[in-house]
Image 1 (cartoon, helix red, strand yellow):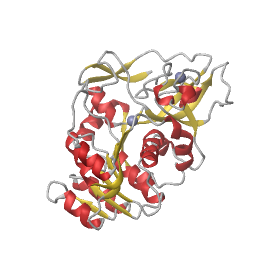
Image 2 (cartoon, rainbow, N blue to C red; image 1 turned 90 degrees about the vertical axis):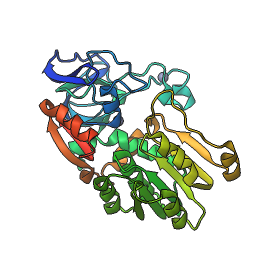
Image 3 (cartoon, rainbow, N blue to C red; image 1 turned 30 degrees about the horizontal axis):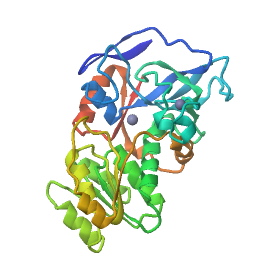
Length: 335
Ligand SMILES: [Zn+2]
Ligand SMILES: [Zn+2]
């Protein structure tokens, strides 16, 4: 089969590789689409803290496709021909963390088979059936949507709450959609790239800000009657934005660092500020608890407009370049 194989840092080549072999507890999927995620770019640069820069490897974890083979020891009744979305990891269900409500930290996760390829094999816990009305393109949004849902959950977004979102890439926009559905009264979105800011405007942000020309804090405090926000999300992964998120939060506010940050870097946060404002700061490490609920939201939210570009597998390097240049919202690879 054809696959995009990463050979070295910043070097991906499309070539023939053997098809993966389905284990008895797995299903094999003909990949329809695989989204490019921010972490794929970090892996490309050898900078993602969870993935060692070891090669060759095939990436791609936000995927959808059609089941072509079902292992003999599967239990959930999956059928050949069934349309599914796939997610990066399946927790074992038995270890300490799995039995403590912390599946994200499972010590025996089944990890993904890279989806920038024609076929992939997945444990049953990594595939989710797609409702008929959800396109295979939108199916790739299952995992990022689950992250946004978990973010709004830990950020206690609810009716009447005020929300600030830093960065309107896919995670920022999904957070905006979920916050709006959750009843947020005011949503501020800060984004330097005009193309991305316009998405936030179309999708119902109360106010958008270009942080390169406006002072986000003054706009934010004005919007919230001088109090600051009930929930603030950093969806940029930039240290300066993570720091700024803390300052935008109002009394009792929740700050969610909803991004992947560089390993070993620190952000100065005043403990006095946390005391004075009774703030909580949350990290977001995966979202296995939200996948079934996220799959129930796929047909409810209007996700098609987020998918702006589809590239054939052969053009994956062009897709990476466009993604890095901020020219696309969500890019999909079609193997
Ligand atoms: Zn992702
Ligand atoms: Zn486990």
